[in-house]
Length: 168
Image (tube, helix red, strand yellow):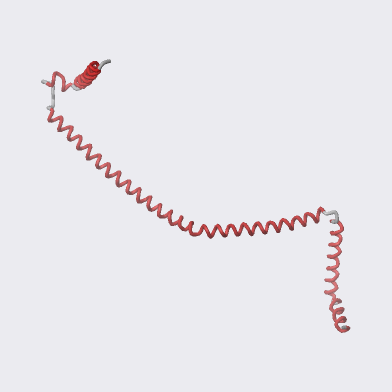
């Protein structure tokens, strides 16, 4: 294709669009003679009024949207301020709370270690080969404590203590 054929194609397509728009609007047919309802000044005025109306509506809509955006912004500012107070309080106390938590964890670790050591001793006591003899010794000790309690209640131990003090 050469340059002149491109120009011809463009001109023909513009003519086609123009002729189609003329055919679609009956007031423009017959070259605008006889069947035309409005002259170009009236059409310009109508278009101008429509443009002004649309502009005014657009301006009103813009003002409404701006007011809504400002309301949303103020609501977000209030929420952010409320959140900021909570966040600042958290930041102020979080360091101290973290120290307390660490101290509690260390104390728990220490207590758990001691408890586990005691439990190991109890476990070893029950699985030890000397368990039976240890239980027998414990039973003898409990029996001895019960006999001493009975002697104290009868007053015998007080009498023995008084006698020992007089002899000394």
